[in-house]
Image 1 (cartoon, rainbow, N blue to C red):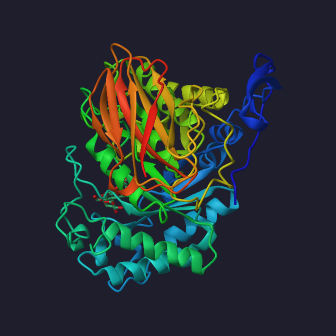
Image 2: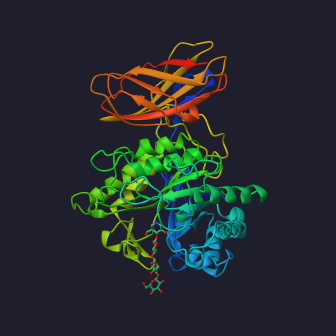
Image 3: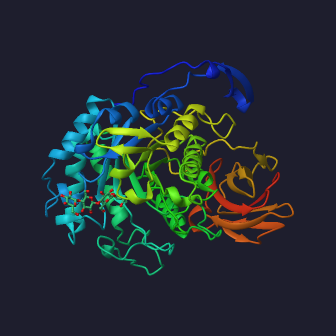
Length: 504
Ligand code: G3I
């Protein structure tokens, strides 16, 4: 099943030639001119042209002509939650509304996101049950709808509020055990409900030959930082989970309920954070988008439209960001009606488009960026999946700078994603003709640039000459193979020239 382009309308101002970047053999990048696609006049068609889906959350009572016309993907807002469809042994019950939604999506050529399996909230009869019962439910839910569900939220909202970076302390996370006391539940001897649920889901997908993608979904994980520039520890914790369990996790959902909570407010580093997850090889989705209309100084309409545009652009600029879903159709029908966070006013199928709708449509019609950092993506029906745990990252926005070839040691390349006032660097360390057991990468940051956050590395220094060394899991690299680490900074990174020293 894939989203259809729907109706298109040719407008002369869009009948221009667009600059496109073509990547040709031996890594050479050239600019070429290609005909631009005609602007689409629905969200689903504009998104499909750009190579992503644009979806909506709904209940059976909300299914009307606007849904199938404007949206290419459907998430049951409440009808696939365990409190509706799970019994106490993990069997299925009351699937009527879920079936209605899946059938509607199939009839209208829409993708479906299953929402959700393992969640501390709305657990219903699963509340307090064992991993074995959860596993039973996971298998039953996956097998009932099979490939009619393109994406499933296997684990939802596993991390605590208030930017602690910790797992929740409610069931099902109370099952977790840190056997060796090292402060995490990532080790083989530990018990981790996230890992064990994804292992079960992956087994079911593989045993059934399903193409369903398995996702982890959370909120307040959208920016690299939260308001005030504090590192987003919740996002970093989610990143560690995805990196550790990459072989079981195919996709990451940023819920994106943006409001004026300091941990939720839209930050300028949204795109960099999407890119960071995409660089792990997973698809990234904006899964539950709504934006408080008061976020922009009460300038009702225009500020919200600008914020919507910002979120859509951040996704479009990352090739592996393959879908955006709004959490409802109209403000009056939203779980947060008073904040007027959606794209339509009105109700009961009689909807009026808001400024935010026009902004989203316009931004989608601009398509993905044409810089080398944004290669055309695969369409959502054929996204990257099941890649090795160290997949090649997206091409960098600036040409990589690297040390000269080193036959036996290591080389390092830096890829930068920059914005006004900040940047994220992804550093790839490649072993030469012999394996290495450890590495150290040095580089000198230009004046005014400061490292604020780093991952998958130990760092010494924040400005000027800075040094990065391997952490436990990425020191050993086989001959010719690579490992990656990253860091975020303020200021301008300029052009970075890394040196790499290896331990044999
Ligand atoms: O249908 C009953 C109705 O018969 C009854 O009269 C009424 C009385 O309160 O309740 C109705 O059910 C409500 C249901 O939404 C349908 O409107 C529930 O009380 C209410 O709790 C439920 O809220 C949902 C909420 O999840 C529950 O946690 C929202 O609709 C739904 O939008 C929201 O979705 C969550 C995502 O699953 C996860 N991420 C956050 C997101 C927003 O909170």
